[in-house]
Length: 106
Image (cartoon, rainbow, N blue to C red; front, side, top):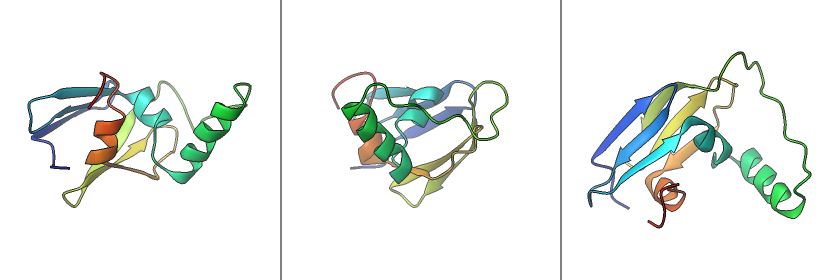
């Protein structure tokens, strides 16, 4: 997967990716947090798929609305995002972002 042509992060809104083929994908903050590729979130999504009554964990140190606190490129393959609820273990590869594009098929 090629690197995006452009990334635009608005801490209160989310991440907008302009791909090399011209497609523009927008990922709201809450969606990025829920779809974090970290092992703990993958496990939680798997559990929720089996049991829709799964109790969701509360935000650690959350105060106010969920926002992006920090983001950094990881080489030429991904972006790391830290959230205001304390979650900071997700590294979003370009391939993963394209796969979870909330706007439709990649």
